[in-house]
Length: 114
Length: 110
Image 1 (cartoon, chains in turn green, orange):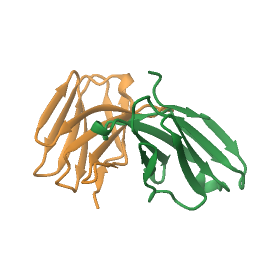
Image 2 (cartoon, helix red, strand yellow; image 1 turned 30 degrees about the vertical axis):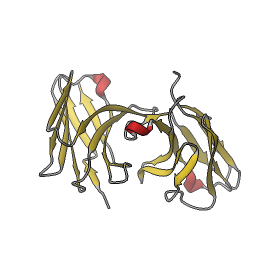
Image 3 (cartoon, rainbow over the protein chains, first blue to last red; image 1 turned 45 degrees about the horizontal axis):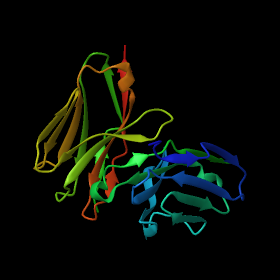
């Protein structure tokens, strides 16, 4: 399997623009997680899905952030409008329900908002 | 809620053993994990231990768990330059979700 695939790897945008990050989980995994990593706050769980259904979005910082999982092989994280403080590395991870702590991470999407 | 603490940096000489420590607060945690993050990459699961064990060994890695003191450690024997990375401790909470430490950056001196 190719592992968790994220795109884009790098995104530079201007404040106020819409940003869409994409993730393809490992086939057969039924949990999908979106994390954000910054130097100041470390690794933060934003939202996770089970069988394409959002279970806990309490980590989503503001209404500017939204995530969807229209099917088992695709998820998006959208920021609209983006702000400089959203600059971070965003990770997608997936896991099997029988081993929810064994996460497989993508390479991350590094977002810079100017 | 659950809290997981790690020191931010550890510096060791190549060939020595590295010991990365982690403390946590939730005594009901069933699984405890160590992840490794190399520069520019995602996190990768290194190893994990079930709470009814006190030690687990996997090649150069040894995990020690002291449930009484809520202390977890990762020992890397014969540390190599390729071991340079950030090591994250993660503990499963009562909702089966992971609570993460801040990560320990392992620096290898030649």
